[in-house]
Image 1: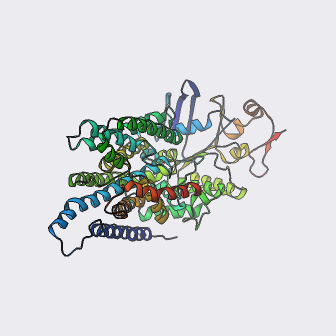
Image 2: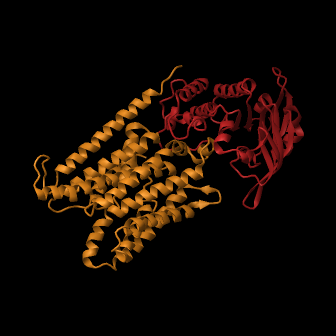
Image 3: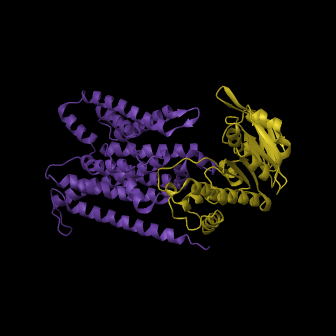
Length: 324
Length: 256
């Protein structure tokens, strides 16, 4: 029997090109739509200020956050062999949220304190969950998820305690941020996220083939040549870094890491060499679209983007859970 | 190909394997027999360096097994074990291609020849036209054959099989054993098989290891090891021994 691998690649390329188009179209629409509708041809001075200083950084940051969360979710799901695993579930998001909040309360004047503390928080939370889940026989997925839930709950209660330290104006912006909010976007925040998402995607994609084996089972992967400890460490560290930076930039935009990879898998199968990059591309479009909705439905007032992603994501999650 | 010298394995404080030694020669099939909990699977797990050995040494092609990387071991030793189910929709072809991971680069895509090998192995295991079926939609017996196809796809020269005939109907049991035997006789390969089927061991193995209470109590040719006394000692049952009229190998019948 003679076979050709090119068939699979053509299908992947088509799908990838389609997703890039979707991303470009959603960015294009997001630029035009808003509380102040813009036309591409004539911009007044104030309109061009809105475009370049407010709207564009926000859209592009949204794209980076969406890509980060989706690819982090996709790789963690594979690593834990659970399609329902999410950064939020493993305490990563809440670790980052607590870190950001500490920065917010104690080092507000230092611009980069938020991403740094978020990164540290995400890393510490992941490390704690990882250590709790490890036993002398190795890692067990149920144990890991249970540890994640415990750490998440613990961190949530600390966050609630800390909110009592905030004054009323800070409290409102913090509550918005906790729900996932892109309105504080800056160009520097965007550049940081862009660099992180490019590096993160390359690192995670380099583990895609090993993750394909881990998806079948850790022992299987080990038997067939994967250094599972190394892959696990790389994926955990990269995913928590991406989630940490996203949370610092925009709070906990929920369900992106869950819904996006799932839809990608439905469309093109489980091969992580497709799932990881395509999740990044689709996740970017997803958040850009969700944020455009958040900006426009009750304009001139705004909703946090996390509320929109949760409104779309929750019913889908319930559907998936029941189908499982 | 594989030389095991006085290995012991501990699990926490308790010893689960004590002072095991044997060698696997090229072309040889070894059957491991023993009661449940005797340490059979543990022994198999130690052979591809999954479980750390407390003392003693394992040599793979005359080198200490610890000197090899995971990939190098996977190129030389393939395992067929009880598989854990995945919740992801993985196709049979993707599953079998996992066997090609240790060859070529770990980052990119499989080559045409990798895919060709996977298709050939599917065909060999009576799984033609299964490549796009999903793993979690297959029957137990079909999955077992996919595991065999994946092991073959590695082109490893040593096969470790943990109760490979579980879930298989009679014709596929025969197919599996025939394929393993053929591979050992023609491709300079060898195999170690854990089984509970004494007659299967007698017919197919060149050598039998009989485990009891975490150590080997007898090893050698099937006819030397499968004696009434040994089987009484290990399994606590009376057996009737005679010869298979076709092959002249020992035939074991349990007396209830």
